Amino acid sequence: MESEKWNKSGLLKKYTRNSPIKWKMGFSMIPTQILMDERLSRSCLVVFWVLTVHIFRGKRFCFPSTATIAKEAHSSRPTVIKAIKELEQYGYLEVERSSGGVSKYYLKVLV
Image (cartoon, rainbow, N blue to C red; front, top):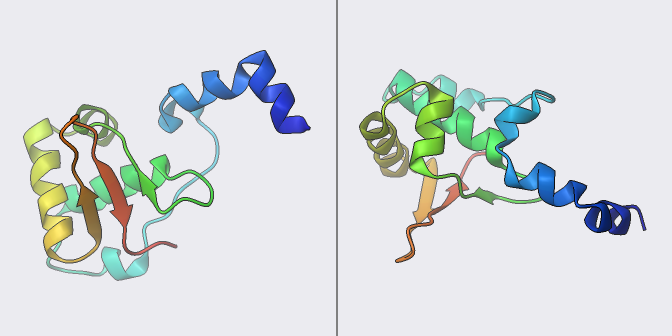
């Protein structure tokens, strides 16, 4: 019932179309396994953190654009792309790329 009210009033659409970083509530964590992995750069840690912010309850994936990740990570787009490849290489992230340009990011380690 409550979710129907949100859908009818348009609030759910309003909140889900905006980046979670704009909500300025809640928190996210980086798993210790990733934090202590000396192979990963700082960029990888920040990109992984941004991706955890975009995970919605009950989901194991998110789909922010690389431009959004770069903005929220305070990094350049090439740095984000390099960090994503690095996270994939070490098995912390799986990326499902589509021809439409939207990528799904599956975090392999969740808190």
